[in-house]
Amino acid sequence: MKMKLLILVISLLATFSLQAQINERYIEVTGTSEIEIVPDKIHYLIEIREYFEEEFDGKSKPEEYRTKVPLAEIEQGLREALAQADIPQNAVRTQEIGDYWRQQGQDFLVSKKFDITLTDFNQINEIIKHIDTRGIHSMRVGELENKDMLAYHQKGKIEALKAAQRKAAYLVEALGKKLGDVIRIVEEGNSNNASFAQSNVLSSDAASFDNFRTIKKNYSMLVRFEIID
Image 1 (tube, helix red, strand yellow):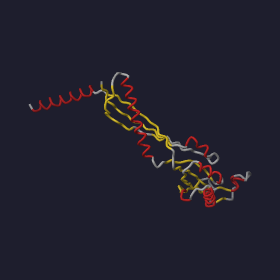
Image 2 (cartoon, helix red, strand yellow):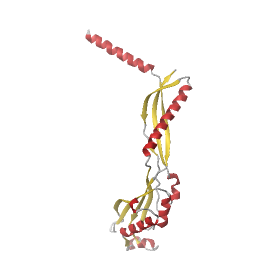
Image 3 (cartoon, rainbow, N blue to C red):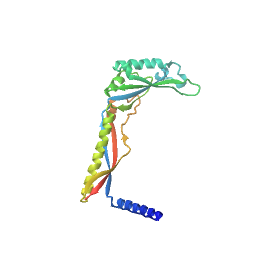
């Protein structure tokens, strides 16, 4: 008798649960937003590399290269150029030191990467005005940052939620219904669309970074709303 009663209770619960799911009316939409952020910290990455003076005489062949310019001399020239561009020494950080393999039987060329923290893209122009490109292997914009990034994240998510609410509202109103309470909110994968300019030393002009001066963040929120009469 107890077993039959237990089976009856389970059956009733299953029936009620199924009925609740059938009667639940909702609309589920995705709201998106994009926030554009002006960076207050720009990481400018410069890699220097040892070279041979004969590379620039316009006549020597690689097998004739003999006079190597040491890395320390190249770095000293770089730091002097940065000082002339009014970049403080504490804004210059060594990122990596490595060897560059040339060809078998030839010397390794030592390289060094620097992460230079800037506050304005115009500082790139100043660096390029003073720098000696010999020994500079690459220059590019790295990570862009803003100290209020968390506040921008919050704003972006809120705007995405509001966008979902507006979308759901006009869709159910088109059916003569009204939007009810929120049933579920799912934060979808938010993307970072900040494009970090990749440039070689010949085209590293600040003017070429016009399309990369801001950080663009995209936010997406999946929201389920109740539909009421």
